Amino acid sequence: MTATAVLTGLGVLATAVPAGAASTPARNNSKSEDVLLVHGYDPVWAAKFDCKDYFKDVIKGFKDYKWKGKVRGVAFYKDDWNCDFRIAKGERDRGLKQLGKDLANKIYKDYTSKGKSVDLLGHSMGGLIIQAALTGVAKKESGFPKKLYVEDVVTLGTPHAGTGWGWGHDYQQTKDMRPKSSFLKWLKNNPQSTQATDWTAIGSNSDAIVSETSATAGGFKHWARYDNLPGVDDHAALKAVGTGTHKMQYRNEPGGTSSWKKRGAPVDWATASLYYYTSW
Image (cartoon, rainbow, N blue to C red; front, side):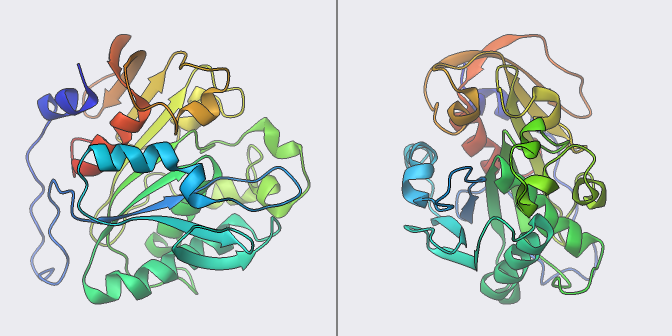
């Protein structure tokens, strides 16, 4: 049974658009939004990623799903390449709150100011950058745009409650990922954009870098936890495994946590979650 089939069965009624919000894009099940892919932390000296290679399996998943919007890689390290949505040219000492501000302002300039909404997907630290972007807007903090239109967010192996690997380096980005850091305390649970935003957090019990409890923290309505994905590195597998069925459990509030079941791959689950605007 695919993730799409499960999600279809879990659909709920749409939320009414409030009066006076005619200029806000309608929320709906759609493959037409552009998707911005935010990569994670680079632990090696280079501090750079090839976005197309980093997300090659995710990009293939969107093609297989017949996604109509653009799928764009976000660059924030100065030497990132094959990325077509640059928000910064920094190093590993550019903190996650600042990167969230960079992302929010770029989304506002290229999309929100034109009345367009986007979907976002972040792997590992990339999910925290997304959470920071929406937190700053929701808190109306200085330097962040006054509004954003972000319909759906998926995070894969994101340390929403921190990771012990944050002690491995002394860069600002790793400091921000340490459990109980001031940055993590600043983040809002389930931060919402002006359009309202549906979050799905996906993790794995076998992820040696980000625990399943941290990956599915953050107060989001939907999460999925895999038991043991193919290969030796579940942290990478969350963005690489796009076929087959795998042992996992999920929660779709207001319902409770499911029993362990065989369901679709994480890439399949992620694309379906960005399609459905409310159930996933």
